[in-house]
Length: 224
Image 1 (tube, rainbow, N blue to C red):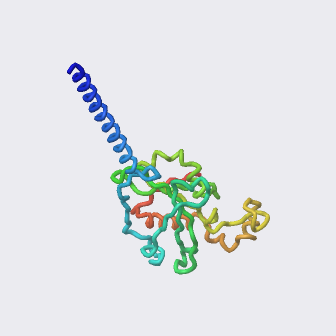
Image 2 (cartoon, helix red, strand yellow; image 1 turned 120 degrees about the vertical axis):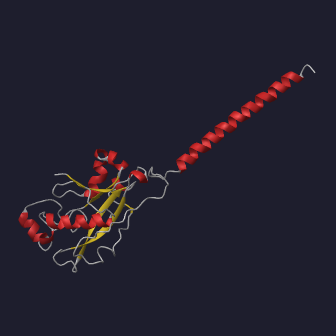
């Protein structure tokens, strides 16, 4: 009988140890469950709230407005955008004076908001100026300057007309040269595009982009 008490003590100790172990396991499972509430981009698994604008740009065919939807997918280039970024192309009128005519593809890039749906304002469109600076390349390279805004905005940028993947204008010594020689070289290699590259056409592109992003008003930040 003298051994009974130590045996009971060991059993009580084992039970306490088991409870501690179970508690640790449950805590670990809770941490895993919390981690699973976020996808690989660090965003909540809560269904994303999409916005819909009701004011399409005037004087454009429905094929470009209500009939067009941006198809976002993982970026394949540049290398810096292959993680956490989406890319898409937007159809826009080559000549807004003849909106039913030829169209062009405007290259887009997006970094989705990391904040909760309830705080999301919409999309902030960034233009990194230049002239001649690609937004598709610029957003991943310059994100650290704008990262706090991801709490409230999707950050969106684009290649303006004449730049990058949006009807690029060539002004080098040859048609394949991506450098700049002079204005005569631009006219020689890309003269047919020059009438459709400039502020007025880019402004119309931005209004169309605003609508397709689902925003009633354009939220825009330009650098020059």
